[in-house]
Amino acid sequence: MKRNLFRANIVRLAGYVPGLQPGEQKVIKLNTNENPYPPSPRVFAALRGALDDKLKLYPSPTADGLRQKGSEVYGFRPEEVLVGNGSDELLSMVFRAFVGADDVVTYPWPSYSLFEVLAGIQGAQVCPIEYHADYSLPEELFSNHAKLTLVVNPNSPSGTFVSGEELYRLAGSLSGVLVIDEAYVDFAEEDCLSLARECENVIVLRTLSKSFSLAGLRIGLAFAPEELIGGLLKVKDSYNVNCLSAVAGEAALLDLAHMRTNVAKITTTRTRLVQALQELGLEVYPSQSNFVLVRISGASAADVYEELEKRGILVRYFNQPRLRDSLRITVGTDAETDALLRELKASIPET
Ligand SMILES: *Cc1c(COP(=O)(O)O)cnc(C)c1O
Image (cartoon, helix red, strand yellow):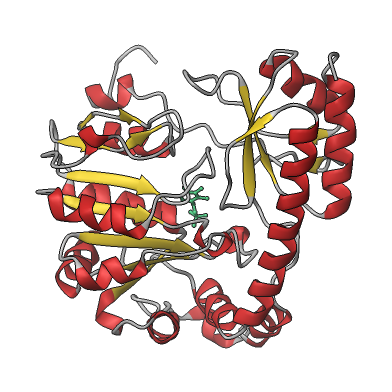
């Protein structure tokens, strides 16, 4: 193309690079934090039940059945809940609603790399502030004047958790909006949902992609004061959640026991994985998620990543400052974890 037809900030934009999704190949997939266990049988039954003539009609613009269920389960009014086509879409709505050209967006870093892309689309400036070495919140994050501050909690890719008290103090110190992305919170010991009730500037995001095993259906929930949800509704696509996803999400929320059983299996495997990695002499950050960030010693993390890939195991490597010596590994089934540990040992010459 000879002419440049794009906005200048889109030309500059690198675009988000998702983790690899291999097609038919038989690999052990520990790179994008999906749940290794299937969703509730109720989800399949609900989907089958929804395959009828109603598909010719548009869905509820605000996915009202799921919105209602989400409000009941998490203790909000429906007006304080917004359903998204994945929490990634909710993040994109947040950026469209609160961030304009040349505005400042901030977040502790390293964190979710999508934030930089969404800011770039708005033509906004990002001002990431580095986490302390132990991934506690940097003091410079407090009292900042950014339009939007985002904290992933538990954080990705570190898996670490900051307390509700810290985030409450952070919310109260800001002049702009605080988004707390709780994509992994069902794997953690506490959550910060109450902040969406107590603070006028807090939006808490949840997703059914990880703990509920529904990444393929794209279902996210936002919880916030009614005024914030009302503004977000203005930038929403008219029918952003399709009727099958809405029905499936509702069924998933009716079977919390199924989700909790899977979470318990995963956190048990996580404990075992962390111990085994430590026995190999590797440093692991304390994880409250369904993945661990491990610092590779005795070989380069990039080499180990490639060696594991050759051996049929996909993990995540980030070619970024502070992460170049590390790998992020999703907690899979016990059998997948055994295979990972076996191949990892074989990939690090020193151990
Ligand atoms: C996986 C993930 C999401 C995306 O969730 P979807 O609902 O699948 O869009 C959002 N934030 C973080 C930090 C994630 O890791």
